[in-house]
Image 1: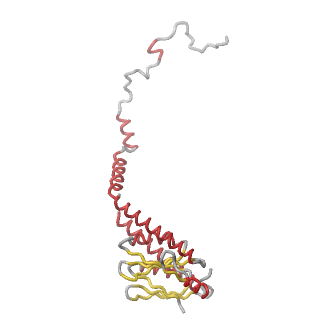
Image 2 (image 1 turned 120 degrees about the horizontal axis):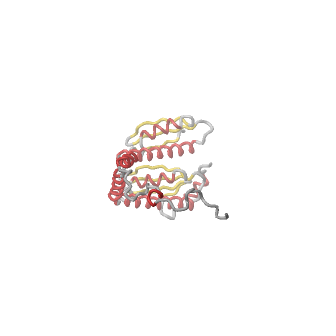
Image 3 (image 1 turned 30 degrees about the vertical axis):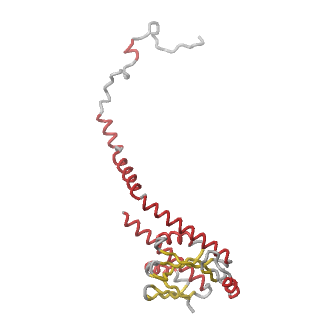
Length: 79
Length: 168
């Protein structure tokens, strides 16, 4: 049973989700699909990895990427 | 690393958060109103907590963000409360910092512009060299470049000009 995380579009950057999916390719099979106002990620950890840990770490990476992108956008807007 | 087993879940569910937050197995969650704490302040606090715990945001309704903090290791309700309390304090600090930053933006812009203006007004090395070259350096109104003998004449009896040995 894959772990499921919903990323609301108003809170998470789609680019950050794509970037994290690519980063976690070796650790999990992640399928992302749009769902209403968000993106649903279904995360199936590769055998040997804790599914919960992989899902939580994936969530942190997406949030970190979102924050970094917002900061870059804010800096670019200031220039 | 371990995630909440059934016994932990039962223990946690029986206890309440001292701060009134929602407790779960190894996680605590609470809602933040964007009218009180801007989204950028939420992100600022989240960024600082990404290394401490797992942070997950959802939007239960407009202008409201639900923050869920999951401990990286098994945690007691008191520890989760402490984590959430620390997050709430950081959230307040971030909101205040952003408010101050916004209110002092004009004055910071002014000082930055003034510093840049001063930097551009300062002459470059090339300009200083050109200035030196253009000056009449050979003019010597105080006759500094004139040798002493030429100016005041030689001392009598000192025809050799050699230094005398004080011991002799």
